[in-house]
Length: 154
Image (spheres, one colour):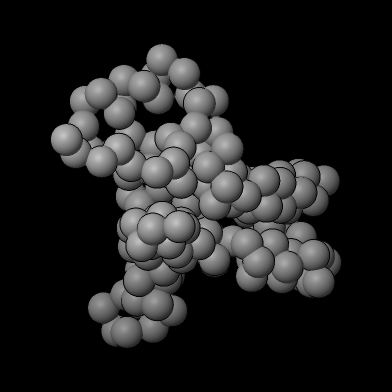
C-alpha cells in the first residue's frame, strides 16, 4: 500500500467522520431527541421519516465514499444533504441576534461548515478536470477507483 492510498483513505475518512459514526450513532442512541428536533421544521410523521432518511444517507453514503463503491454518487448525495441540513437547521438569519454575537452567529459558522463540507464532497463527485466531471454524468454509479494503484510514468 502506497502513501498516496493511505492519504486517500484518510482524507475520505475525515470527510465522513461527522456522519459515520458520530451523527448516525447520535440519531440511533437519541432517536426521540432527533425526531423532536426534526419536528421543529417538519411536524407530524414527516419528522420520523426525515430522521430515517438521514440515517440511511449518513450510513450508506458515507460507506460509499470510504469504500469507493459508487463513491461519486454517494459524495453527490452527501453534498446535497449538507446543503439541505444547512438551510433547514442552521438558519442563522432567523435568529435576529447575529450582530450581537448570539445564537445566530454560532449557527452562521455551522452553516458555513456544512457548505464547506459539501465542497469537499463535490470534489470527489466532479474532480478537478472536465473529464472527471463528464465521467460522473456518463455513469453516476461508477466508482472513481480511489484505491487503485496509480500507473507509474514511463
